[in-house]
Amino acid sequence: MNETPTIPELDIDPYAADNLTDPYPMHERMREAGPVVRLTPYPSLVACGRHAEVHAVFSDHATFISGAGVGLANFNTETPFRPKSLILEADPPLHTQTRTVLSRVLSPKAVMQIRAAFTEVAEQMVERLVDQSANGGTVCGIHDLAQIYPLKVFPDAVGVGPDARENLLVYGDMIFNSMGPRNALLARAAERMVPVTAWIMEHCKRENLRPGGFGDQIYQAADSGEITHEQAPLLVRSFLSAGVDTTVNGLGNVLFALAHNPGEYAKLHADATLARPAFEEALRWESPAQTFFRTAVRDCEIAGLPVPENTKVLCMLASANRDPRKWPDPDRYDIGRRPTGHVALGAGIHGCVGQAVARLEGEVVLTALAKRVKRIEPAGAHTRRLNNTLRALETLPLRLTPA
Ligand code: OVV
Image (cartoon, rainbow, N blue to C red; front, side, top):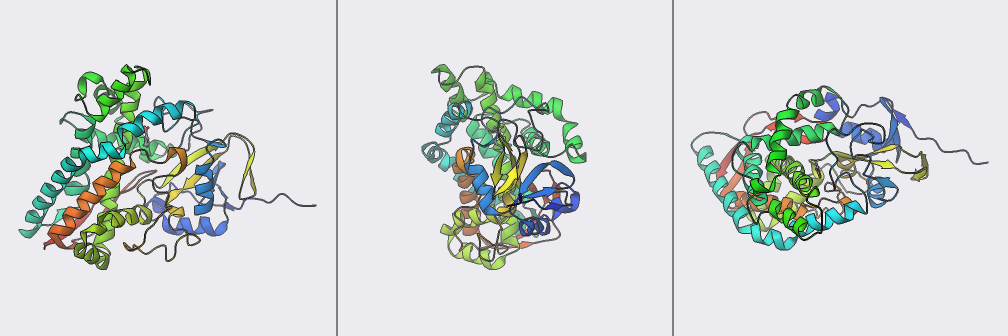
């Protein structure tokens, strides 16, 4: 008679400060223990650290749903931190309707129309940074570049006014912390929840959005009856939730990758057309969103192991992106690699709907750097901003040598 295979259990807390600071040893332990593991501190969930299972879970949206939340909290029994997102925390058929609208607004054609403006801002910003660094100064890759660039170009494209945009960073930090446990990181972020949420929802109103921008286009979809007018502000909220802190950290992490891999930066400087693959490889190597959850809607199996109905499934995206079963020499940042199949932007029907905009930001910033900067070097120790979901830097001192 066959025995039911059992899921190995590890005494690991993925949200402990040391694991957030350096997640890679934890990822290796989880991958090596098995395709699915249990974690002693969170007995109600299972976790997948290998690429094959993360990809399989994301590809089976009918079994592994998002509507019960894509963080640790199970919305079947816990109240959501905020009204649920109509796309992130939704399943078909609702998800299909809202995704259709958002994917049109963020389509490759829409991205062509913002390209010139995004390029110009990137070139001006790099010009300023090179001057600042040439006068003997160091620059902060985070405060002087990775934060200010998305905070300028993306809200401009959505149609949000220029004032107090730092609220977008605070809001993003809060949402991504809310996908983990109710630890000190979430408690600190939540202290600012009431005023920041009020600011965000105010900026989701039609009268506060520039006509023609991405936000206004959501209201146009409501005018034509594709979605309701009640849904429109919540869909604008998705832009303001997902569109800033993600790309801030995508840019911060690629600067970190290039500063610590001077040979790779030299290749980019010699050939600026490597900007896109260099950004893509950084998404794989140092994934901004480290984790997302799904919830099993029925008794099922992952890799032949039994997963009971209503179990939260922790998908370790960053671990999948360094799984040696999938990637040769996975810990190496290699801009010559074409990391097709990485899951930094998810996979399946919930795969990042803004990915064309995210890649545009990465491409134009790295292209501007490649043309104007010969070397990017660390100019002191970096510091991290710990977050329950994001791989984030607080500071990244850099010296830029003009070309
Ligand atoms: C943080 C995040 C990612 C993706 C989508 C959303 C939020 C949303 O609010 O829809």
